[in-house]
Image (cartoon, rainbow, N blue to C red):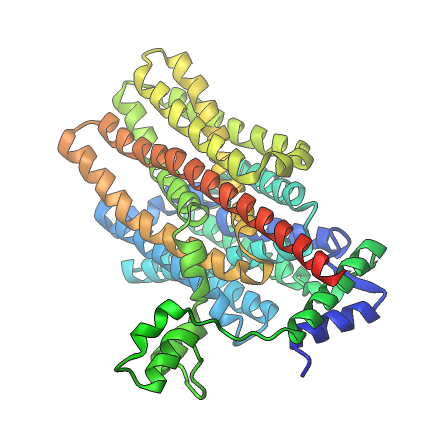
Length: 496
């Protein structure tokens, strides 16, 4: 009986071409859809205080309530992103994108008519968070599907455009508040969020635009070799060998026990339990061992969680140091400039980034985050600290922009959505656990430096563990290649 693998190889041999992602064409419109999606869902995140200041004052929300809102938002993003892969088993990508866009739009427009804290938590917290979690995952997934060779270039361009729009957003919000007031501004932002439906229309399945590429002669030769190997395997007897030294263990055992022990015979008709089957229908359990507990998952999630907490704590720290409002604004501006400049740089050097290694560049970015933050704490000169803020922006770009690329490099394309779900879930859990812990350190010690050192230690942990993991994986890969080369040479000798 011919194996399924052999059938696939035979079918591929009969074809004169193979289907590959377009790496362009409609993919450029998909990149525009990602820009629209990221911009409408995240660009106004930095304007939270400006947009909702009047409402927070009118209902007398305290800082604990605002913190609760951010926790609800983070949890919604994490859970929605995590369950995106499971939802794709129920509906198509475009339908899911439409539903999540509708939820997000209801959240943004709902803030216009909210009158109570409960409505605030529901609209600005749950609805916007859930919509963002799904759309972020889907946008990264579809860009990853359309591009292979140009993936870094396109993702850098998408993030650069999003960064420019995010820098314009505060200026727009300030102008809108002066001319239309708080409610008018929220209505305008709600209207802008409706553009996300344009992004959904542009998200056509990659199968519609696959490119036909002729199969090279070398590839056909490799396929022929694989077919020979498969045929050779079928001719061989795969009888397990029982050592004579093991015969002494056979006394006092039944035939079934002996067979199970030495021959690893699979049990026919064995079905998975109901609970396990239900879990596997929701999450990809194969990624738990191969991805979830690796630095490719934990590193980006921990880095971006620590980065978000740090940037929230920086302005109060600078004010406590006696900085003026203009100086604090300059620091944040330089942070944004460093971020944007690095995004442009990534767009220009995208061809070389894969040669260097995405993970290596990511670790370098985290190392810059460590050094720039230590430099800020140890410096007394305002000018020097402002320079360090530029480097912090560069580090933030590496942490934010390269995260999807690190994940795409770590898992097969068909598992990318599930991997992004695990990443978003980890990010949400870490944000909600690290944030209060770092805040408690700040309150107990009455020192921002102590809180910053705690965050720096998290970055440093990544800088130490990730290179070690890369070295171990590199050595394993080298040994595997050497073993395969040896096996291939032995097989060629047998075929001769």
